[in-house]
Length: 279
Image 1 (cartoon, rainbow, N blue to C red):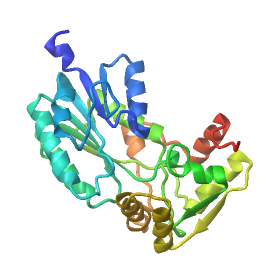
Image 2 (image 1 turned 60 degrees about the vertical axis):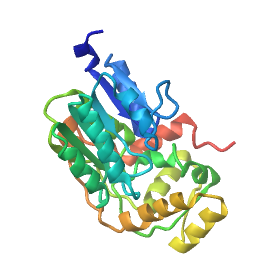
Image 3 (image 1 turned 180 degrees about the vertical axis):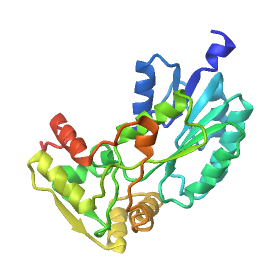
């Protein structure tokens, strides 16, 4: 393989996560050289271990940057900034950052990407539809009761497949450099309305119970959830879910030339897989 061919390799950080694995799959299906960056990969990558960064950047020309656990956590900009400097010094010429919609803290990392001196694209999103089927809300759905510290605040739930398709476009096509894509679904839903949609799709009764942030934190702590995770969830459910994202945007349409996927379509398709079936 020549150096030019090697430089076509795309590194997908968080390559086994909800968005990352979808990006990797699409790139592989298109025969695009791709390397998944994760702690479990043959060549491991760990945000907390800088010794793992240089090896995964070898021969890479483009990087999808997804920071774990979230760009809002303390120290995220410093870590992202250090990785960005190393990536550019290693020959990376295009960066695509998965950022948080409505997260002021995430914008510090965005600015570092934007000032790196290479092509960049920012993808801003907040609540994934797939949080109900591939993340911490799956067990409550199966249990028939979802307890959250959220009120009647609407959210434009976005499908992870839409995010992945926009990411692939930004990673492989021209015309996306310098763009900030705000990624949303096509309509606003409260958590109660989203859960009711899942109940309809499954034919099961699934209840939504609103609790105070303090009660929610206390319950998580009692279950043994690490304090850092508790703090992050409270931030996402209270600070970010305060109405600041209660508006739609055209990021999916602008990037892909089609409307975003509706939550009802996600719920119907996911219910058909059986993942929400009890027992």
